[in-house]
Image (tube, rainbow over all chains, first blue to last red; front, side, top):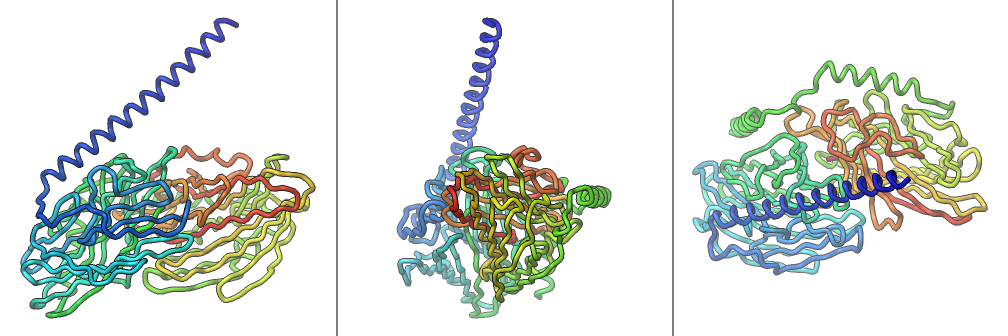
Length: 278
Length: 285
């Protein structure tokens, strides 16, 4: 009986030790991933206009229907909490934003908050603000493009963020890639599973007590759009985005939607991207 | 110019795909055939009462483009067709299997109806309580009279559109009972048997990766503020779970290239005569 008791004790200690080692390993991986995020952010170009400061907070619902997010003066979403207590963006280096590639000149313009900006933007202007939305307009410093972002909360049992981006061509006819990007650290964890379908890009954790995630979805009319996942947390080069088309596991990656827009002189095109929990 | 741009765009994507390499390209015809046979055999060997059906009785369609959604409900409240966006079917392929299950945790009695994946044979006939352009309400009581399940299945137009399932479970017995209530779907994403599967606390999902020619999928979501213990999971089999042994075919990990299924469960305590209501939804991914 004594031998049996000792054996059970040793087995229990063994599993506890294994669990402790797993937790320590997860902590170590998280620290390493966040450190790598910091290094990538430090290496990224950054103008004095780039910011991760929360200026326009929005919130709807409670508990499982809570959706809380925050928008910078430049139109980056630097916090995304859903459901209550589960944060997906404001973890480590905060990366979220937009990019444009002028396909005629191969010029890239981007602002990815903590992961830097391209430095060729004029200051953003807030043109409208309500309790449920904010509208921000920004023109590239060469004057060729004006991006108007309307970021609005859609409440209900499945709340979501509606990001409407309208790109205006102020110059001659040209074509462009318009990108929305987010570095998801699902439920505060840097390394996640990531994948895409034709309409959606999503990142999530499984298994465990913190298995939640985020889906980025193209919800506008049928434009030419591509969902993307990246192997990296930092934002894509708008003129050379590295697409991954396969299921990724245990990766500190990021998500996005890329739209191909054809713009006549003075014309505008709008796309709608949704962020929601999963 | 547009066609040139589109070609360039697609060409670029193809090169990225080749660069990435991998195992999730076009469906493997041999594996697909094997999965089709396995689904058929599993459906044939499952128990079927005379009431079990996958026949479409109530069809709902809404939206256009990316928000297009068409689904169909049987007399028993199974969703045996789910198409979103247009032309991309996720359930009506092979065996049409979707439905509900209950485990009475006091007596360990299971009740289920999974359409082509069979039923437990201990249900009374379902009755249609109401029907409208956007919804159908179906009531069904177990043959022992202990439980009544009322399902309201409603389309919600939006971005994307949803099929919202409200399930109200009433305890008709004189006792306090604990119960597990299950919603299940055999997903064959975009008409392919072998898909990826995974789940979070709020959702279970089956899909094909972008590299596939069938890069679509569907999600089963828990909606609203459910006060009951609940969670999503995926199964590595296409047929429905035993409500009293629901985790037998899951290992709570990401699955790839599997003919699996998605499940959401709720565990509820119900006093004599009490009713609990939960809400879930299917949407495209």
